[in-house]
Image (cartoon, rainbow, N blue to C red; front, side, top):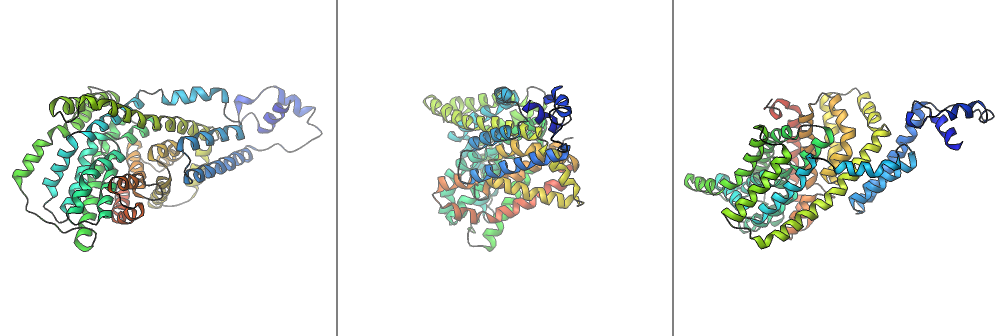
Length: 472
């Protein structure tokens, strides 16, 4: 009867799957002496929203003190389930399994494997050489070459941290030798690594597409122009630092068309992977997941057979490293989806959308508020987890503001990626510190010009939908 009384107080309209015939008997008989007023629907929603706010706050605190992300998501989800009683524990296992039982999600470990092969082979060095040949003759050219090396490598790896680590190992020593401040040299690799999640193929675009039922192929193509914008913005910031600051170097050499053509020919294999991926998807030859499998086959063919930079004895370590990365991401994705489902059952996204739209502000102010929120989240959460956690809340707001799902995805991913170079987490800052030996805080300080350039680019992406959706 206790459960019946609780269900009666909540009301059948709030949780119809828990309403039974028993509450009406309780209300008319045994509950008559206690004539407490029936709780209205909004009061129950507020109670659940307060519980959700408390749980989310505690989750953020535990993330800051260093608890593993999947543990925080798991404990937070289970806490909401137990405290609110609005989600069936019997379906918990099914939900976790179904969250990973996705054909589109299968592309993630395949792109991780392809990026791991490329990072150990010759393709990365050839792409960096092309960047040097194209922009190395400008003031601050070697810094620009680092950024363009990240841009070209992003088209084959799909990972920001892999971009930073691979390019950083090669370019940071060269930048130091040219006279660049060591911490600034590391910050160039960290900021350039952001291109790894914007230039297709992007693992975060895959996750966004799954979370919002948006075409991954459209997201890949839409990321091309923003990738150029980010690369150009970072190059301009580097030029200004080298021209007016003391962190860079004013090296300047003559441009050689012959050297540029030679570098372009040497980097031909590096352009094959993105051409195969995007051309195959939009040519109707295969899906994004099948494109990931083709990309793996392509990089194995190039590195093992054609250039023979990777040996067969290296395959065991390559597969092990890729498996570890996938194993880290899989539970994060599973518990993130569970957390998002629990929030949806509690109607938290709907209440936040109502509160957001209640303010009579312009589109520009709304975009600024979203940028600030994404920057804060990007400082604390790894972007893949952030996408899975916040999209149930943020995506309806984007639709309310009139964003196209693809345009909104590019805007959100680009803004979140700024968190890669923003303390206290700043994954790319840690990766750059690991490969350069420079202090984390000094690298973060030297990354400030890149940070400002990226913020301006995020606003440009939000206000220029036709540039992002050029292919439609």
